[in-house]
Length: 334
Ligand code: CP3
Image (cartoon, rainbow, N blue to C red; front, side, top):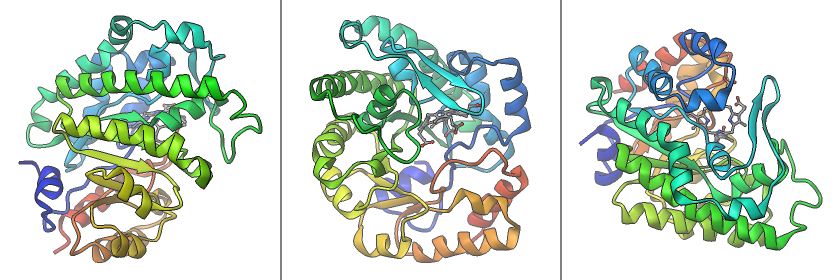
């Protein structure tokens, strides 16, 4: 059993497994080199030779316990026929939402569009660098994907005033997302993913009265589906105000916390496996600060099953040597 699976399934506390969100990405020269030649980000994600190579890049450098497949949560709206583009220094930009055409998406077309992702997972799985490690597949939570699909770009700090105007559209999109996310999850598992992480990056934007309808119910349906496939599920409801209630209702195998959340409070309130928390900005400072901050998390969770990770993705300006230092520090911490 891999260190992460031992942590999740056996509640083993001594191994201190580690992987990092966005561990493959712009802070690595070898990624930037490929990216420079491949200006269309979606096409890059759908090139299984390149996406599998990028997935493995951080594993060649660092002693990580998992690979996370190089892809993006917005490939699902793309495969449902919505236009998705990534603009430099702006981020994702989506086209208008056309419910009629999205509703007509055929399962086979959706599968064919995402087939390169599954091929990439198979390629990574067959590489000896991951033979004793986990391979993490992922999806965006229905809520976060809905935010992108309706808002058509990153919402930054708040939703547009008329976001909830068309309740019918929202309800239909959530149902379509649930159906196709299950297909995408199952295919990632069939291709070799050993864990699924659900990214709910915009969970913090929703008010309490809407939590149940837009986050709890759709996420719970996915979590129960993943559990039925006997694969552990990690949930990351970024900046959600009440992690305790979220865990009580959703019951994921692992909860990833963000960096604005108090880890002491989490340790006291939550009894499931915890992942993450460290502020990725700490990696931009110096080794002493990094060591002190990493130690804080290791100490707080020393008697709790804990997977070391960040409270959000590795930032593009990060020095890979700091990442190396962090991983070695965590691995050698008594
Ligand atoms: O973690 C990993 O290393 C795996 C790959 C991965 C990417 N995106 C690659 C990527 C994962 C897990 C994601 C998830 C994702 N994508 C999320 C959830 C996590 C989070 O960040 O909150 C979200 C919201 C997206 C949508 C998205 N993709 C945005 C908003 C952006 C632009 C902003 C940014 O951070 O660059 C992307 C682009 C993206 N996805 C890049 C990478 C490596 C950068 C692409 C580039 O080279 O320009």
